[in-house]
Amino acid sequence: MPNRQVLLTFDLEEFDIPNEYGSSLCWEEQLSIGRKGMDAVTQVLELHQIPVTIFTTAAYAQENKDQLKLLAVKNEIASHTFYHSAFKNDDLAASKLALEEITGKTVYGLRMPRMQPINMELVSHAGYLYDSSVNPTFIPGKYNNTHLPKTLYNEKEVYRLPCSVSPTFRIPLFWLAFKNFPYAVYKKLATDTINKYGYLNLYFHPWEFTDISRYKLPGYVKRHSGDKLAEKLHQLIKDLKKEGTFETMIHFLRNRIPLNESFGK
Image (tube, rainbow, N blue to C red; front, side):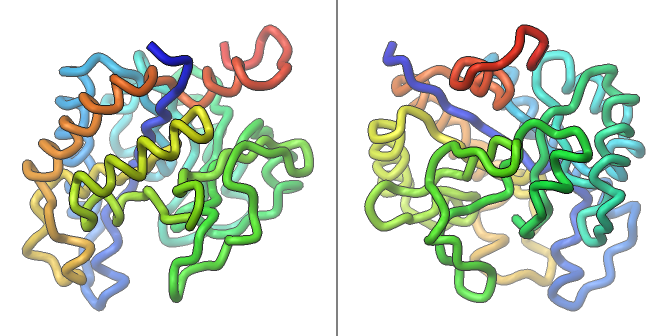
C-alpha cells in the first residue's frame, strides 16, 4: 500500500441551501434532512470501516447530540461555526466550546460555511490548530483562489489544508464535481492528484445523500442525489482504498508536521 492518505470530509449542517434559491424551509425540516443524510453516509462508512472528519455547525449538533456522540467515537469532529447561514466572530470560539461539550473531545479544526474567507488571527485566537476553508480554484460568482497554495501551508500560526484540486489546471474535486463529472473523469483527476501530492482532501454534504429532487434547486445541485450518490460514494471509497489509507485530518497533520505529543490525542 503506497504511503498516501485520503482525507474524506463532510460538512454536516442544517439543509438551508433551498433558502438561497427562494424557498423558506423551516428549521425542523432543515435539521431533518441533515440528519437523514448523515445516517445514509454513516451506513457507507460503517461498511468500509474508515474514519472521516466531520465539520458540523454547533446549532445542528445541539439538536442532534446523540448522533454527534456516536459519530465522535470513530471519527474526528470539527467546527463548521455555529450556524450555516449566519456568522459573527464570536461564533468561532462558541462553536468549538459547544462541540467539545457534546462530544467530550477536543476540536482542532475549522471549515467556514461556503468556504467564506476568515482572518487566521481570529481562528488562532479561538484555539484552532488548522483550517480547511480554502478551495484553491476559480468558481464563477463564488471566489477566485488561484493565487493560493494547493497543498498544506501555514498562515499566522494556523495550518491551512486546502481542498484538493487537480495538479495542472486546478480543477476542483469538491462535491459539485463528484456529482456532475462522469465517474471515470473524477476518478482520473483524483488519482492524478494523490499521485502528485501524496494525499487527497475531499468534501461533501450529508444532505446530498438524501432525495432532494423535490426542492427548488439548480439541476447541477440536486442531480444524482440520494441512493444513487451513496452508491457512487461507495465505489469511490473502494477505488481510493487502492491508492492510499483513509485518515482524519488531525491524524494526517500529526504525521506531516512537527507537533507536541498531546496534539490530536
